[in-house]
Structures are given as C-alpha cells and as structure tokens.
Length: 487
Image (cartoon, rainbow, N blue to C red):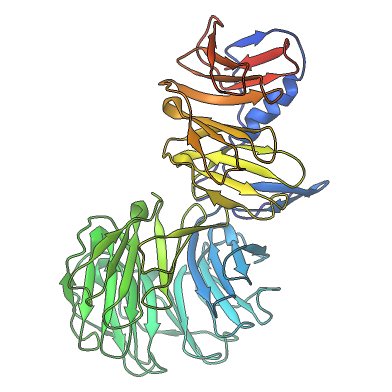
C-alpha cells in the first residue's frame, strides 16, 4: 500500500500527462526513463521509496503550530492530519500516524508524553499518552471545527473554534463541555495565565475574557473589526494580539481594553509570541517576521528568506525562537532574529527535480532557488545555499562533490564541494530546464527560448547546438552519440 504523509498546502498536481509536442530522436533508447524523470521532477512533495510497495513520508505540508517541551523534543501539526516530531532539537523531524486526514490547527503537550491536537472538517480532538506513538480521538461533542487549544495543566484545558465554540475539560479530554461565548464569530486562539484567567480572540475584532475559568466569558473592547488570529499574554496584565491587515493590539490592564500598535506591514499576521514585556515576534503572510524589543512601540521587520505564510512563532528566550509555516517551513533563530535558519522537514518551495547519486546521497532543487541534500537515503533533507531566488528545474551530480543545477533566467550553478557552496556559471538569459552529463567532461543543457548547450570540458565552456527548436523540458543521453530532448 502506498501511504503518503505531509500533503502540500494546495492540492498538488498528479503525475503530469506529458504533452510531447516536440521529440528529437538521435537514437531510440531510455525514452521511458526520461518520462519517469520528467514526471517525478514535477512532484510537489518529497517521498522516499522505503521498501517495495510502500512509500515513506520525507517532507512537505502546511504546518500550523509547533510545541517544544524542551530544547530537544517537540511536535508540529498541520494539513491532512500531519503530525511530525523531533527528539534532537529539530535537526530531523519524523512523521507520526495521527489516524486522521483532518486539518490540524493546533498542538500542545503538557509533558513529553501527554499531548493534544485539534482540527476541523470534521471537528477533531486527538490525544496521546505516549509521546505520539499512538494518537486516539476524543469526542468533542460538537460539529464545529476547532482552531486552537490551551492546557493549563495535564488535566484542565480549553479548545476554541467555529461559531464561537469554546470547550472545557477537567479530565485530560476524556470529557469536553461547552462554555458560552456569547458570540457566533469563529475564535482562532485561546490562552490562559492560570486556571481562572484566560482570553480568546477571533473574527470581527472579537476579544473574550474570563476570570473564572470560563464559567462566563465577557467581550472586551478591541477597537478593531479585523480577524484576530493570535494572542500572547506574558502575565495577567500585559498582552498582544495579531490579526489581519497587519493588526497588532496591546493591553496593559489584563485585556479590559486594547490599543493598536503600528506594525508597519499590511500583510495578515497569524502568530505572535512574547518572552517578556519587551521582547516578542509576530509572523504572517509572505514570510513576514516582525520583532520588537520595546513592548511593541516599534516593530522591526526581519528577513525570513521565504515567501510562504508563516503561522506561528514560539520564542524561548530574547535571542531564540522558532517559527512554523506552510510548505514545510521550519525556521529557527539563536541571535534574536538577525538570521533565521531553515530546518527542512519538506521543501518550503515545491521541488522540481531530484537526483540520487546512489542509495544514500542525493540532491533536490525547486522554486525560489531551493536546493536540499540528503546523506541518509532521503530520511532527512538539509538546505543548501544556492545564491539565487530563481526557480531551479534540473540537477545532476557526477560525484559526491561535483554537481550542476539549472533554472530560470539562464541560471547555471556549479558546485565542487557537494553543495557546500554553489557558484554561478555562464551568462545566459533563456530559461534552462534540465542538465545531463555522461562523464566528467561531456554534458548537455536543454531549456526554453534558446539552443541546446554542450560542453566537452566539464562545463568550463558551453557551445550552442542547433536543434531546429527552442522549447525543451528534459534531456537524456545514453552515450556520446545517442540522446533525446523532449518538450
């Protein structure tokens, strides 16, 4: 049985029906191999053939939340029931079987063993008592999709979601009871500072507050009509809210009233986290990361290196934080956000091509200049710095050290150290789609809008070859005399 975890954020294309509008045949050989290579090159998620008849998840997915119980152990959840975990501080992330295909929006752990995840379509609550080795459903008692949850202890927690739904448990989720929110707006986040004082935020500028564990929830004046997606409270007095259109709200009176702060962005913000009354981050659409060191009086943008939607941020100190987002984006900083490092669970941009040098070592390239490499047969993939943001479509390695990658706008990259560094070669302007070498000296490049390129000296120079056409997607050679280009 083929089992795939880590489904991409948008419905991926199936194996493309290759319209072979053009076929140049120098000699008939390995045509099916070229088709298979081209089909796999357009796959939007990484999978690895672990054994005959099975597929092992290696990456991808729309992640919504992350929870670390310590510096080493953590979990993340997202689309299509995806749950992954790490035991080495995020160096590698491995899948867990959630038992559901539902969208998971939030995940929390009360200890390294006990955790919960909530989601929607339908209403979903999952529980584990063994660190995620097994996940079992809990009855929510509602059809409403759930967006977030918070546990104040190993037994008492709250979940919020569509139609103003608020659920409460005092027995670790064995039973969930509804609490009255007095709103029909979807609630996107909930937080408590102890067993009695809590807040929930949602659509239409909704901010709810309780001082009795949710026996009653009162509306607080947010002064906003925007969708509010995330809330952070550092104590019972100071807190911040993030929302649509770059909205950031601030309270210094326990949420009785909220005032707007200038974020400097119009992008929707989805997650916000503070480590103190002065230092925090907010994240959102198009790779937006904002940081404040003065309680939100000023918010400074930081470079994320991605353009995907970032969904949540979890700071652990004034210098350290983790961010999670779509397309498998796991970001981490240890220098206050001056730099953000990517932890690859799946490509944060879809991969277009993968080349395995052997059963262990391989490379993948994709959109936005993405290059990733594996040294364990695809069990884990680590990012490499390509030096470009152009989309990459083809990759080929001749040895563990020497490799080539090609892409849009004449991008031709070379590495002589296994991808530790990549250097631009050539000065081409047309899009390059595939590269193939038969040995260390002889190779070809095919693309769109230009000739086929050929080298006899290991890529030191490339000469144009006339083909009678200029639109190719793939190229393959059996030997120096026999090859094919398709488009």
